[in-house]
Image 1: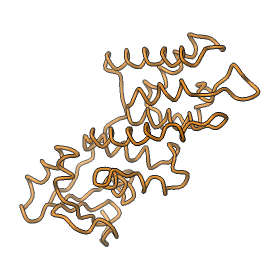
Image 2 (image 1 turned 90 degrees about the vertical axis):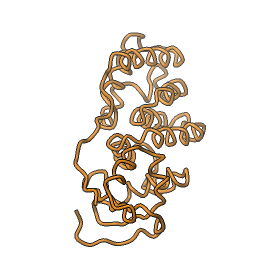
Image 3 (image 1 turned 30 degrees about the vertical axis):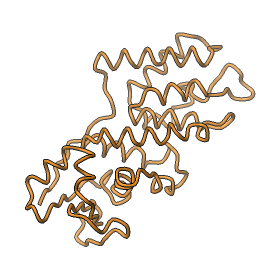
Image 4 (image 1 turned 30 degrees about the horizontal axis):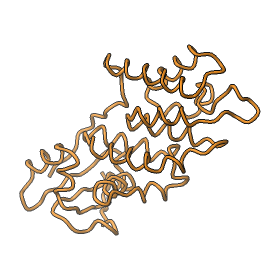
Length: 233
């Protein structure tokens, strides 16, 4: 935990305080957090009624930028913090960190909000000839949103000089595979290998969807939840 604490420049009013692992204090109305996850309601029940506070400790995904992005999402339904982070696409480490945060604190509503925002912006995120289909697939996978991954495959376009290939060929995802939960990688590769090199995108997308739904029904792994202990004071 950071020894020096400073206030966030946006979230400064509310009855619940979150302190990021790098020492930034966020004050927010508690009902936003309670709506996002029962975890925060349980944490508040262990605090003094007038001083609801949670100190976050993980230096990987409980830093001020992740907490700010989370609060932007649940309070303002905004992805401004994410959009300002470098390229603002699914290659950004912020996406992986934010989804780890969702997993740890069981923020399923926030996960769905993030997915909805990117589904709404799908036409601008997937453009022929660029790798946006890769970004959209990765985002769908870390958001556990099968439909986003399905659309990424369906709307993908082949490399100009290789009409039978794809930006989503398993070999082209090797550099970003760290972001993709294993069952999504397996479903994508199985569908790709089963159909052959000249697969129509619609058929490949449908095959992927069958594979990932079967894996989900069988209890396949998702992005791993993290079990660090928090300090509620």
